[in-house]
Length: 259
Image (cartoon, rainbow, N blue to C red; front, top):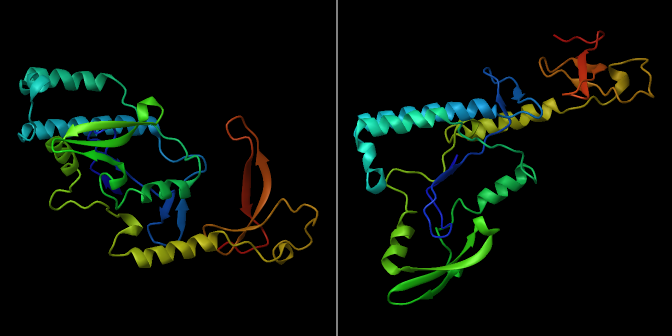
C-alpha cells in the first residue's frame, strides 16, 4: 500500500491512497496459489456501499470522540441536528467506486507508481521564478485536458502547501501487507514464485498421459491439476453462453492418478 499525503495538482492539497493488490494469494495451508476468477477482481457495487457504511461509521466515531472541527461553512455541523442531517443525506445517495483494467497491464501501473514513491512534492524544474514575495511554478490542469499552466503564490503560502507533504511523526510513506510484509517477504515471495511456476508447467509429451490420443487434436493441451499437483487435466468439452462465450471444462484424465 502506497500512501500519498498529497501533491501539487494546480497547487491544491490532494490526499489520496494508491493500493497495489495481487490477483490472487496463498491458500490457508500455503500449499497452492489461488488466483481470482478471470475477468473478475472486485464487486464494485458491494465495495461502494461497504466503503460508504465504513466512512459514515468512522465519522460518527470521530464526532463522539471530539476529533472533528467545524470551521467556516461547516460550522452548522457542530450542532447534532446539522451533523445527523448531513449523514442521512450521505446514506441516501450512491457512492461511486470506479474500477477498470489498466491500459498497459500491471507493468504500466507499477511503473507509474514508482515515479511517485520517493520523490519530493515538487521538482526544481517546475519552479519558474522566485521573488521576495512570490513563488511561480508550473503545473498540469487535469480538468483542462492536462494543459500546462503556471501559478504564483505568496512565499508563506507556497511554504505552507509544500509542508503539507511532510509526513507526520510515526507515518510511513509505503506499507506492505500479506506475503509482502517485511517479516516474511523473502520466504513468501520464493514460495509464491515456486507455486506459480508449478501451476504453469506443461507435460513434456502428450503421449506420456494420453496414450493413443488423436495427435491432430492438439487443442486439448494437458495441464497439471491445480489441486493435487500430480494429475493431468484434459479438456473434454466447452460450454457456450452469452456471458462466457468460450469456457473450457476440464476433468482429470481417468488413466491418471489424481490423488
